[in-house]
Amino acid sequence: MMLVTMNDKEILKLGAIRDVCEKRIRRADAARILSLSVRQVQRLVTRFRQLGAAGLVHQRRGKPSSNKLSDDVRYHCLKLINEKYPDFGPTLAHEKLSEIHDIHISLETLRQWMIADGLWFPMPNANPRSTNLVTGVNVWVN
Image 1 (cartoon, helix red, strand yellow):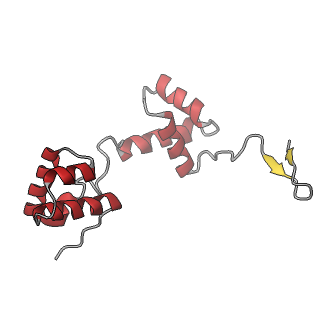
Image 2 (cartoon, rainbow, N blue to C red; image 1 turned 180 degrees about the horizontal axis):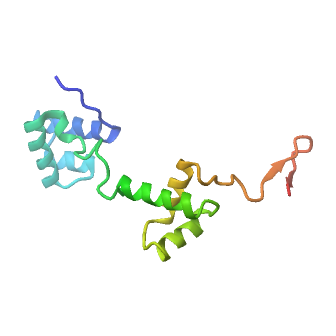
């Protein structure tokens, strides 16, 4: 016996497909329940009969994204930032990597890498507001 981890949507799908296999409901009814086409329900029934419950689980679960950048690119970018641009924020570092080093990655990706590596710390609020505990009135803190 194999342990299969399923989310709520896949558990609902399993119940409907099992009911179709046991002829409790029709494929058209299962299609309506799952918001799928009748043909897709038939594909799921076939896969369920071949592989069991594991056939209904998403096949890419637990695998890295096909769009993931390699660790070599990450280390190269962080090394350049550490050596040449240690006091730059993500936006300026992104510009320099693009213009000078011809490395084109997403600004948000670079920001996340810099935060994880400790090269940059996001400010929680640029101009924080706090509530006066005595009066309950919002006051601006400068």
